[in-house]
Every structure is written in structure tokens, then in C-alpha cells.
Image (cartoon, rainbow, N blue to C red; front, side, top):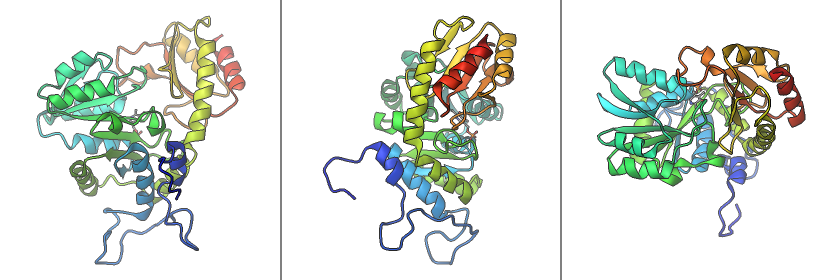
Length: 353
Ligand SMILES: *Cc1c(COP(=O)(O)O)cnc(C)c1O
């Protein structure tokens, strides 16, 4: 590729990374390799150990995040593999408002005596760093789902490392185009590839990225023996989705910013939460009834859980029993997709009314 001194932009690398070598007759895209086993005496040997289509996706995401990527069958499988790094009885500092699956998994592990979660407000750096003393792992999610709080990642990493704890960041909402936690010293990044990276609401997949070869080996071992592997087809689709991440995110973020301007102070909207980047907005309306009515009244926005697809979706988060009780009953999370901003606003405004 270009031998200029300047490294390629991340938007370019989302398109170019993880391609087969550019030699005559080579396919531009890594083919979908459907096989359970390989000829003996090579690197791969068996389908649970590796797959060329996973590798293509992993090379691309690893390049964007700046580490070695290990892909999984879902975001939760990737999260489970990181929690496998915690020794039995180890303390895990975690945000009160993180993804419900992460909270649920930590509570399950706690009930079995496997880990001791310590819940913190991740916007309070001093509280997080104080809790890191004696902890094995500090779990960050920034922005948090669905409260959209931000963590001061570099400051927390410094404090946690001084206390001897590893730091992992769930980077699902920001994506590596908007935030690269490994550059700020984090030890690991996890992704629900399901969301923005794949981007079309047609698959579930997860990933762990780390700059530490020993951690990468442990996480890979956890996948091999835990068996939470992605399918080759999902990896193929996820990589195809990743190719357009930059333009999808740019458009969705621009639309989100226009919607936020209109939502702020709009009658019936008590609060608009937006961290300033990305394409997720949380709004708070009067109560659960008002929020449920809003969600049912939209025509273009689809009432559905999950986020990060090309289509705009919305959901009242407290309809889930597992959602934190400190999330307002009337909070509606909006995932802004690629439809026209005016069409999205018109539909939202009539639904709020
Ligand atoms: C969806 C999500 C997950 C879990 O991913 P799955 O692919 O659904 O298992 C983890 N973290 C965040 C922030 C999410 O939004």
C-alpha cells in the first residue's frame, strides 16, 4: 500500500484492513469458509480453533482498535471470556448503569461466589479509582447503555493500573472510529459486534481486543474451550458491515445531532441525554405510560430492542425487569439510523405529541 510516512486514516483502514494479499487473481474479499475441520499438520486443525473468515474480521477490527482481536458468537460471549480472566473470588469494579447483560452476568457469578462485583458511578473517577484498590478488573462502558454517562478512561486507567487492576472498556456505543481505549492504556476492549460494527440488525457477534499477547492467548483459550465461537457466515457479514462503518456512523451521528437540537426543550421532553458523539440519544418523558405511548405511536422508528442498525429503533428501557432501578421509568433510548433526518423528526414529534 502507500509507502508515505503518514499512517492511513481509520476511515480508510475500515475499508482496507483484513483483505487477502493484493496479488493477481486473489479475491478482494476473504471467502466464506464453511468447514468443521482442516487437513492435519497446519495451524488451524479444527473449526473451533480458528477459521479464515473469522481471521479476516479479526484482522480488520484488531487494526482499528490497535490490538489482537478474538471474535465470539455474541457480545455476551466476549464479555464472559473477559470475566473468565478474573481469579475465583476476585473483585470486579463495574458501572451501576452498564448493559443489563453485563450486570446480570456479574450477579450470576457473584451468586456462585466466583466474583465480587463492586458497583460504582463511572462518572466519579475518584470513586472508581478508590474501588480499584485490591480489585482484579475494572469494567468500563463509555458511553453507558442507556444512561449515556462517560468515564474518564485515561484517568481511571492510571489509577487502576497503580492499584494493580486490569481495565476493560465495552466500546460498543463509540466504536473504534470515535474512541480507541487501548490508546488510553486500557488492557482490553469488548464489542457487541451485533450493533454498529455489523450495523444491519442481521446477526449477533462479539469481540475482545487486547494489546497484551498473554491476555490474547487466555481469551483465545477461553473461546476454544468454552466453545462460544462465531459462525463463519456471521463473521463474513460483520466484516461486510464494517466496511461501511465510517459513512454509516458519520451520517447517523449528524442526524442524531440535528435531532438533539430539536429535542432539547421540546414540549413533553423532560430531559435529552446525548454525550456529544455517536448516534444514541436517550430522552426522558413524564412517566412509563407516556413513554410506552410514544414508542407505540411511531411509524418510521421501529419499536425494538438492540441498536446500531441502519434502521432507527427506539425502546423504553425500564420495560425490562433487569434494567437498573435508577434509570427513569420514562427513559426512551433512540438508536438513530440512516433515514432522512426530517422524516425521523416528523415521526418523533407526532409520537411525542
Ligand atoms: C448489546 C450489547 C452487548 C451484548 O451483545 P450481544 O451481541 O447482544 O450479546 C454488550 N454491551 C453493550 C453495550 C451492548 O449494547
